[in-house]
Image (cartoon, rainbow, N blue to C red; front, side, top):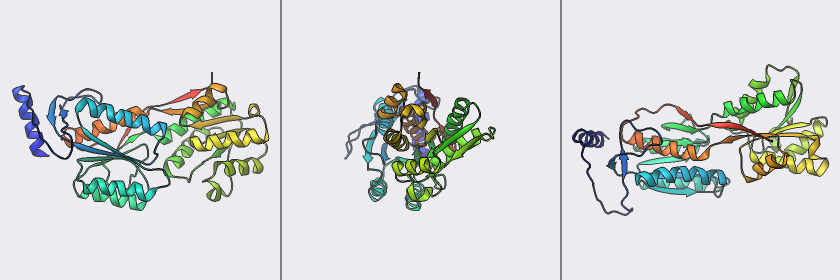
Length: 323
């Protein structure tokens, strides 16, 4: 690290440009580094890095956009970037991809965080071997990861909660559907909603009483919620799967016009729901920004420019509502 930094500043001091050409297993790729760059500027001096990006939502439009952001910065700076994907249910394959990255001695790993103890153990293993890890979109704060890049999920909850309060005019009931096991980022979203609604004593938050038994199935969770609270006319899906389940269940038992539905995330289905007025509002993230900022931070850390990194680098979110 110190050697690379000395080379960089030597090149800067003489105002020259040097090129180092190598042939190896990987195609020759070069990353430029300058101590005063912004997160989106091109880098100037040259060094070689190899980065592995690992996600667990193969084929997801959201993650495809995250990868586009990563690839854009990689192309601009000639970084060797490799993508590895698994499906959500394939935790073994997901962890194995991180092990492979460690074994191949990559310069850095960007990965979707998990709270799984095995995940934390593998991340810590990477750091002990000198390989920095950055988590994106979901975090693993108990690990030795260098930083987290992605939305502030608590803030997301506050934004949608305040919007719901205004739509309910300060009184009513809002049913919450998880649609997935209550991972920490979903709990943070819920806490944000709860915080925003705490100043409205006449708004009651409703959930399925046996939530732990049904939260893997948004259809069942929504059905039980409406059976338990038949007068509930406003529902919030904490995930896109939850929102999809809410819409399907309501279609099967009533008119969608009788309900107000709110969501997090934005995929093509949610966008269509917004356009049709089926979903009243959702929280949009900026996945390309997550990708571009995460790899830029990785490069700056490797070059010794941003050292240490901050604990979190939050990316933009915004409320999208029906017109």
